[in-house]
Length: 289
Image 1: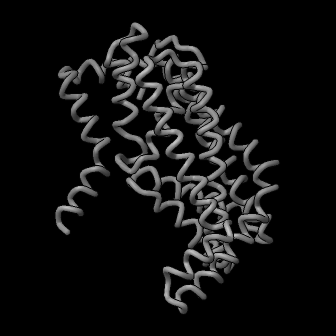
Image 2 (image 1 turned 30 degrees about the vertical axis):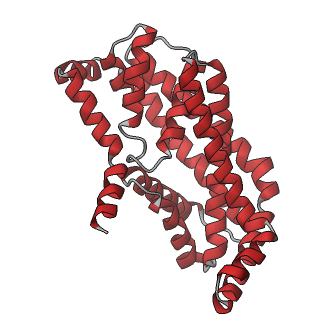
Image 3 (image 1 turned 120 degrees about the vertical axis):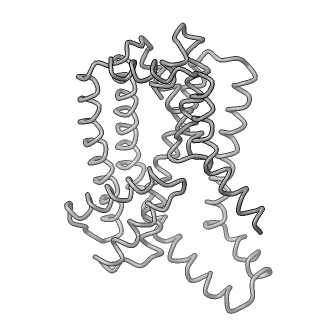
């Protein structure tokens, strides 16, 4: 049991360990500090403003999905719920922040946990589908070696497989027969009731997600990529917007793995490897990450 707990904690903090390894390999920390201090502040200020706008768009997306379930959440409270859950999701190596929103609307609106959870899951599915779309675009554009493409493709297809498997688990009629055979009758009856409520809530969000939530998510990601381009310009890294899409989308997908805190360490490790192939230094790759 102790070994399992150790392995779990080790993999969660693999990203920060990678970051420490990169700093050790660079050796000269002062060069990183000098590069940060020499950054043009104007693009960074614009990036900070865009972060607030991106967060607001995410609030609107979440409240719209919630409204499709017949629940209207006040904008002020929704902003607090999304901001606090987003912050918690950034500083922890898990997705605890997403569950906070479910608790918020349970306390304020009396929304059942099954319905609140379905809204949060649909919200995240919009992020995941759009991210996978940009990853496919990024892989098609980015000039990397054949082996790397194979690795990333395998990872993408694995995530897509598990995504569809989870959808099948809730929506398929075959699931009912499988669970009836595995679970005791008392637990099975309770599960069927939960599954029915969850599936009904998910299905009622499909049209709102396709016609509103996903277009908003695409806009959010494009704004995020523009932030990445602005940061590159602030430290005099001349990369194209499509290269930014490629790098950030791929590292964001890898950041979903539970081996770091919000992708910290993974981004810096990948950028420290890739940026020298563009003619830039390892230090610039780390600072950009």
